[in-house]
Image (cartoon, rainbow, N blue to C red; front, side, top):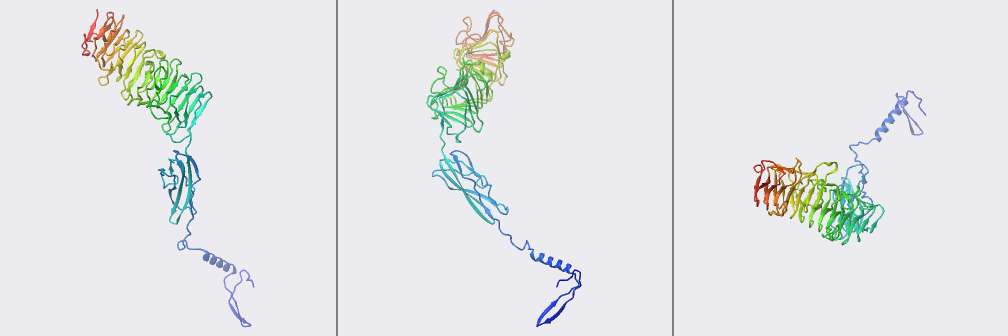
Length: 518
């Protein structure tokens, strides 16, 4: 029978029909008894964590989805979805379970969740991921199918805006091929990493009627214009007629050009047409393995910017340009990479006043590249040569400082300015003629050599000649030598510093060191 709550119970035993009945009474209340029974049940249901082993977690390897890629493309695998059901740590181990015959592809970071490799030939690459810890291991496989991508052919005429994408991951393979000369009369934008391979004797023309080229690569993903065969003189090169201020080449390589001349007989990787006032910005570009010059900028063309470019293994010199573009060249560009002539070559031209009338400055290069003047250079403005500059004059050529110009060449004892013949022969070039009365005409810490190939004025040969009413020059701490005539000739009505004989050095001049006409 139920025990009333709060009743006092006692123990009593009785027998009925040979069966024992036990009745228990206690001094505890029924509520207390129920509490004791509940506590006992709780203790029996608990387990000792330290004494009872836990079940092992379940490992599940997941090697990621199958992939379809191009040969030469970096493939990144992903096993990061692998797991342990108890979140216990585990290790990764990847390996090829099969790959195409002849493949030498290898895994990078094979003991991480995301290793990588580059398929080197077309075919199927099967990889296995194993994850493991103290409780076991699990495996899964992934299939990477690599195919050789095919280049697209450029159209012969580009008359609407076009963007060329980096289609093929392997930079040694072309994204596009040009089997004919391509004429560009719209904006052509070329993305980083693009390679265009040109057929024999073809060229790329950026026309003046709407043509624009914007080719901006990166240090890691250069844009390349190359021959379909990697040999100098295979295709003709790129020519820009366009005067657009948008024209820009940055982190671009031009190679294997020079099969034929593009402007007259001049072969070059890149030519700028002068009559149309073509212009371009060149930054971080490489001109190499061309059967001519690297770049030719004709008189009238403009280098809008010129920064950190390099020229190597070109049959002629790296750069051929007019005198008015020289001041735009930067010291960091390199012209000494085993070219036919490691020089910056300057065309016969007139040096006119810069915008705003400021003087024009020719600086030197970090790699000590000399300037070589191939033709007559007439200076109609202020012209300053910085310390360390070397001018090599072509055979029978002359520097003429007109009445509106001046020559300011002030070097240092340790960093002289040198003006000499391209060959170190007495009488190789004509010399310097100064008709200017400017007080800025100054030569200091210079060497002037090898003039006198032909008369400069009035039948006189000399390294330096001052002619015309009021022409003047100050020359000190300089060496004047190897002239096939006079060292210095000063015509009447012209003037030179009075200590010219003692403030300078003279050697091996065929006639007097200094002749001053009264």
